[in-house]
Length: 591
Image (cartoon, one colour):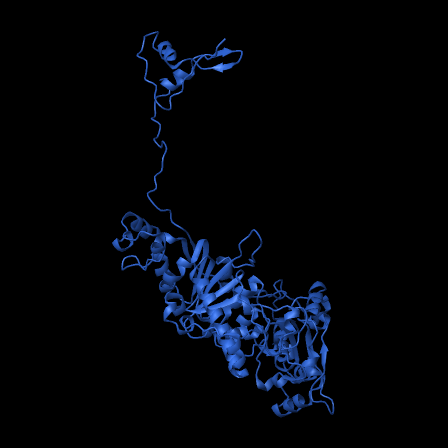
């Protein structure tokens, strides 16, 4: 069964409240969940139930610690929309004398006898004087909490003295405002990467994820060609290189595309169990993500919402797919592994007799250090060997400095996608791979590059002042951006949302890694243009084509070239030409 079908124990979910805000929480069995002013309920009420259902908190009974939940049917959720569509399909009678314009806007028109035929909300004033209920009375109704807030909304609307002056649109807006404030409902949503991005941008600190929107996150995965790519007997699997400073959001989006973000039902059985005395599996060799980070440990804090936390010694899900498919190493381990103490300090192999003499605590420490060193050495060596299928970057570092060390690790045809909140670093990077700079590099290569003889040294060339990067290693460099426009879709009043959250626009650099051809390249062939001649003057080619061909029983054989020349010149003898390589000898077939 898919992970997003039923609510599983210890999984992370999102509750969309009536105010359109999100509350992200973990469903731990036998615990109470509080959603603020809306109430409290038991977490067991949501376990093994489908996602995307809307629940209503019923009135708290005597002796109960939490409210009981009721599933709200779809007919009740969309009752106002259905009623509005029915009213539009069946307009009011002429006796009502209420005329609505074709665009759904009401106008005020007073007849000769003073009767209001049409009205508008131009003179409508919504202030505290229009509401007869005081704040003390409203607080008492809120504490009583009858009808899951629906009774309070009904009393508020009945106590409004100017309710009859509102148009249908303003009345619907007023009711929606009170519903968001007082109705005790919520919708259970699966926490995926898109919803996590929305929650962080709108309600958390968007700077921690570099203000990366869902559309740019999706474009980065597309342009990096991230997909499931497991090794087969005759097919080599794929592996991707990533530099992520968004707290693991980019890694999560890539893992979701590769099918390794969510654990299976069998792997979920290990949630909450101890990982001690478990044999650590070997790192995977295909369908993997290799992350390069700046610190001693990678910042993957957002992956805890998908039951993966590499920073703790007791992982929430020891059998998570990312345990073997996500590899991490520091820049020091990549550039100069001999200077890294974890990589360069090998663990001494102990004999079985020495192991038996150790105390259990020291024996466990020995095995833990040995496993860590073996894993680090395997990841560093495989990363330095290269052969990656793509590169995705979301970092505040200079992309030029990153690509100096990342481009040689990519294989030919690998896709590159780099995200930046601002456009300036990507424009400079695009200029380093421009056509004019590539032409100048090929025409007159720098002396430091021309002196290199091996192909490996040329790929790892660190550049100079004029050419910070080797422009022959990347093609089709471009910079783009995209932003999704939100719309309000309601009968008679569909329009784009005119307000929104600001922040960085966000841009994406895309390119393809290529392997340049070595040596001098020449184009061979005849590319001269034909000379224009007068239409009335016959060319030699036309004269030769007009000569009759001798037809024989065995086929059609062209006459000898010398005989054709004599016939064209009126029988004048010509000096026979010396046969050279490439000439065609034509002879008549023997009888």
